[in-house]
Image (cartoon, rainbow, N blue to C red):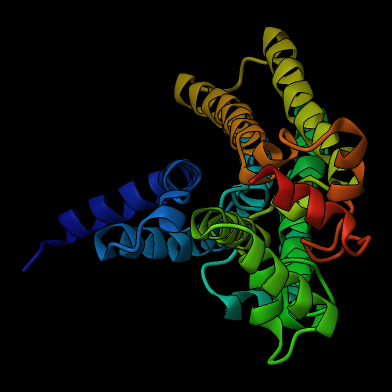
Length: 326
């Protein structure tokens, strides 16, 4: 049996490092998802899918559990500053929002979770008042975290079946959301298959399947709409501003240990780096690669097409332009 001294040592180690270790784990999980989640679209190998699935489940649990631990701990300035990063992590990477279609149907539950986690994070921050020295970077990261988490919830809503099944162009989407397609759509599909060779038709289907995956399981429909264009620069600017303000505050705030300083810089630089990686995935996404083949005058119409949910469509216009490029 373990002696009392061993148990006490383990408990002391846990109480000292539990929050710090879980925050590091949360950052590592986010890094894994943003880098390897796109492999799920290209490969169905269980050795790839299962680790991504387990990491996807672990990501939300770690962030939620850590916020709960902070709520029961004696909150210092630095712990209150770390809390919004967990809200940022709950927003998840752009490369994966849902693992299955059922996740999208639970968007109302995720909306409730959004409100509860924001409330828990604000509670942790308020526990460190008054005399909080890091209030400015904490507020900036909190704003970025709320935006990121709201983006994820909006992506769930856009990909939910009730919203996604509205009339749309695209062979695959029409087959997915209803047993019968509109007569005009069926006629167009038969015409495309008849006039074009099998290679071009299969290429078109491959592209539509890829676009469908991005619409259902990533943040791309949110990032590429007007709301995303407005809020994404704000969230990035808030994180960058938090990095600058934290560096300035350290010049006259000497109560933090070296580990706390390095971990905080790791969280800030990690968040900025992951955002840059997300931008890279966005630039080289199938949507933007397809837009690159469409004449500039047609690109705005395609971006507003109902190929993705939540965006308006002009029947025939963007679809014909996209088909002509394949």
